[in-house]
Length: 127
Image 1 (cartoon, rainbow, N blue to C red):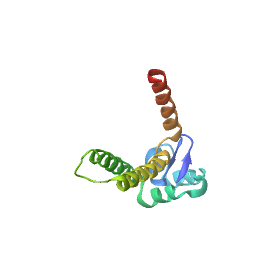
Image 2 (image 1 turned 30 degrees about the horizontal axis):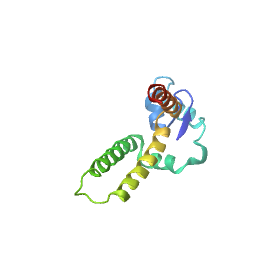
Image 3 (image 1 turned 135 degrees about the horizontal axis):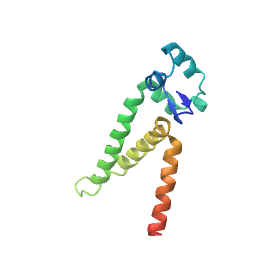
Image 4 (image 1 turned 90 degrees about the vertical axis):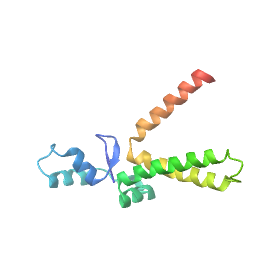
C-alpha cells in the first residue's frame, strides 16, 4: 500500500491503476508513478491484511463485523441468551480492528473531521 496525496488515502497498485488510467499513456508508467509514492509508515499489520486479502474483501469484512456487533448487542437484551460478555468484547475488538483498517482504506482525515463535527454537534445540542 502506498499513500496517494492526491486522493489523500492509502491505495493498492491495482486500485491506483484503475483510478488513474487515462492520466498516463500506459500501465507501466502508472506503475512507475505508483512506486514513487510513499510507503505506509511501518507497514503495519493492518496494511499487510489489506494487501493479503484486497480492498473489497476488507470493506466487506467491515460490514460483516459491524453486523456481528449489532447482533450481539441485540442478543444481550434477550433473557434466554445468558451471559454474552465475552462475545461482546470479542466483537468490539473485531470492530476496533476493522475501524483501524477503515482509516487506511478510506480518507482518515475526512473521517477525523466528521468525528469532530459530530461530537461538536452533539455537544451543542445536548450538553
